[in-house]
Image 1 (cartoon, rainbow, N blue to C red):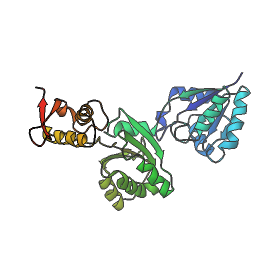
Image 2: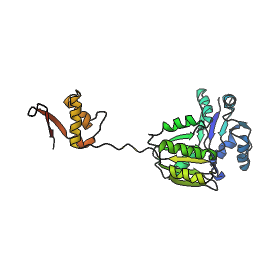
Image 3: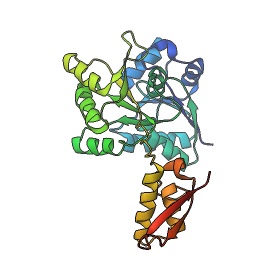
Image 4: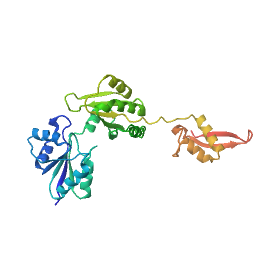
Length: 294
């Protein structure tokens, strides 16, 4: 019978955040797969846990993953841990989870700290809907293309960033999104934790003067919905006439301009009262009288 892969969340700065269930799991598994064994062994030593460690990270995942899988298929249990936070989130652990799923190995989450969710919670920005974008690529062209694809994203956006890249990233964010609210969450749960709630333009100016320190989570307001254009009745009538002149039928012209469920609504509910247009031959056979329902 195959073993189980446990995704064990580890503290992102404060050792007191490791859950009792996480401790029990680390003590119970046969071995631990760690992003950096040098980091994880310090955590294990702090809690007096002695377990065999194997390395699993982005540079060896294509060989280490199948090796871990074979041990799981052989009946052993494994805890996957990262240096900080939840494994498999913006992390090569997702490939190991996929391997296990493809081979029928059970995968269980032992939840805990997550920098993205923690930053979102303290950001002061809308949390009902958000998109997690992780780390932006170091390739400048690809990074700008990524940001351009998010220009009209209405949900709150969450990014990770390292201190040595923060200035360039903030400049790219401002260029792509314009000035909008941002919360810069630094060193979460650690001694020098800080959340700076400001705007992108102000953040760019601030970090031109201040040296960025610590790991950052950037929480950025989503795009505001475009303002609807509400036309006066006179403007709406003119648009109907334009559509009639272009060959559109009266019913379709009124429906399109009034936005009666048709694409291309430009005037909204204020024009829904248009009921009919009648043609009068009184003036050169081309005068239009408009009748509106009360």
